[in-house]
Length: 369
Image (cartoon, rainbow, N blue to C red; front, side, top):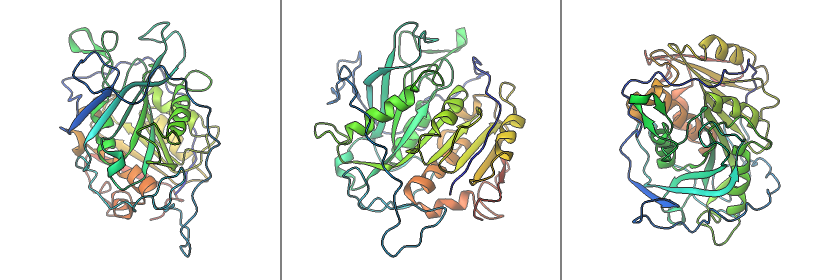
């Protein structure tokens, strides 16, 4: 599967009209490592002060296994993945539930990155959090990479004292841990910038993080060493992070993208696109996201309208049971793990999302049905 699309830029600076959202998401087993104020946390083998290694040459997209006919919806299995990793082919898993893996967060690691002044951190650049299966060396799989981009003024989780969630003061910084944990529990390694303006800077902070993580995959002292599928990289983001994802989509290493309530014109796209809007969103209209979808002419794409969601309420729709959460999970399982069974969420007239009355779905003519 592949796709291309364009749209008008997303407005920045919108705060979520949140009510009481479940910002921690599904109750997943969680281990935290890296730099933290918690003295009981285990130190990560990653040093946040270590300089980022030079960006590796982008790996070529994987070829089909010998004797296998390449298709639009399949890439290479994890067996013999580039980047020195050798692992089993991924089994299917239910995207409407947390995945089978315990989750570790490597906090505040990697290089400093991000445009200054930052809306939350001022003149201080930030590093990255990495959300991943805890026992990478023991899973038997090569883990695809997801590059996450925050909405404006937000972070993948709270990062006190500057970045906190406080409904009393209408402060919403750190609203995405539920989604981060959901994706990592399904086997993805998610590199998440702590910049709160992810669509600005050259290179983008997300791309800086990806370069660093790919370097770590070849560093024998790193927990990621030869455990990543460096040919299977996706990118996703919300609001301004959706705009950031649209910019990053031109990077030839990124083979699938998804955006939630945020788009902008694309300079290039190398894989399929899932574009999600919220029908109740007054910040980024579904019409603008539909314009993006309708402009896709040379890649498969899917447009999903979450009918009850506003700009941020998709974060509080019962975790992995919410349509945005499980659509994102299924999308990347299909495109980065060859989880053919999960195509049932998108394929055919009776697809799972087609018959879910919480959403409407459209698929362009290039999407295999």
